[in-house]
Image (cartoon, rainbow over all chains, first blue to last red):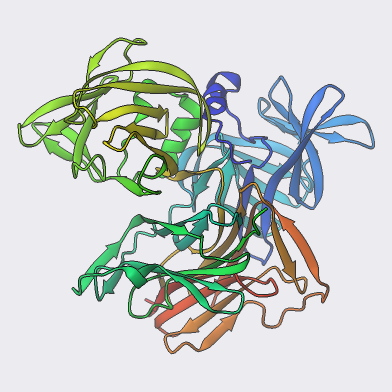
Length: 291
Length: 303
């Protein structure tokens, strides 16, 4: 699923001048809403062959829609009842009727519009204005997709996108992540825990550590008993150190699981500051019985 | 500005010099995949550029024990600055013809290298159609780099070097290049993300909860109700001051979900919290609540 098809990306430059609505299974766009509590997440959840064409299933706008990009560069939706295709985006036209829900007629306001949102600032957005429905305006970014949508007083701004296996983040993020390389481990296997402290907010996070230890990690069984504690066999210099966290800081922990019996476990990690409940992550995994 | 590297990658195609993207903040995480010595990890980071002799060098920390390694592009080649000898030394020439030998002094046990192949490779982070493979000539018996694989637009993806205990291979498991990142194939993660660390009183906080399972095994989740997630905000004393689910009704039906892929929940939170230190706890509303992510943030007086 997480195949990074950079070669395909490189081909894009010759395949389509500007791909404003990338259609690959797994693509996902997450928006924040202002003006009303109305979340929006768009996703390409599948593909199918129909009448000699490949259509991609878009979810998130109420019903699911089957879309494809024609050879002429027009994004069309399949109308299964009518057995016909209806135009969503005619990227070559200045004004056209669109079948996008609640849209009516689309007019290109600019092909080099200034875009400013959580992802950053760009000046190459395609800006479309709509009339005849509740949809007011959209901005699409080449190779990323729909970045801004305004409908009936609700504004949706893209905060995260996953396009062709590449994750696009907003410019300001704060998180402490724990990621594991499996959900179920074979008996005696090794677990890799990848800890990432992300601070791209521009605001420094200054933490004071009582020693050279920066993080810790523990594993508990389903009864709550501690079965592994990363720092238990390690020594750290007892020096007070203040660290400014900016950008990304990574720690990778390799955990041998040979002593763990088959069953469910909870893994917990934290930044080793005295108030160790402030930066924390909890996840779970299973150890399978030996075959 | 974060989008530029991605757009460049998406739009411009893979050029030779992108084999080592040099932007401040870029990071690569590697883990040992074969050879003696367990599963050691190492991390490479690009620092802020420095000027030496009128040329701009990017410091790579964590690279080959030289810390930092000052590198710059010179056409299709990459060179590094030897601070002891105060001169530039060659590392790689990504524009070299296949099997054309070029000097490479990146390691004291290497003298030259060739691009032995530009071929499809399958790595932990994905499959690539044209990745230059550098094969090095070593001058030491059991030391030096044997081979490196670079992925255009991403950077060094795989390295094998010689040791007295046999070859050791490291592979890229994560990279962040500008404002985008790539992960290794298998990731099982849950986290909360905030859009700031310090907020003015009354300002909106955007919280995003992410559940990702790109491993080969589906994640079996049991939800006791229609609720997917929850967010709790606590003050410095640990007292709960806000809970997303308070006042919301959920259907009381047990749901079993076999989850693969990626799911996000985004919430805009606007609270009038007094200035101070807080924590936000995001959790998945499954039966045992065993997915949880806690972050600290601060509220400052309104201006």
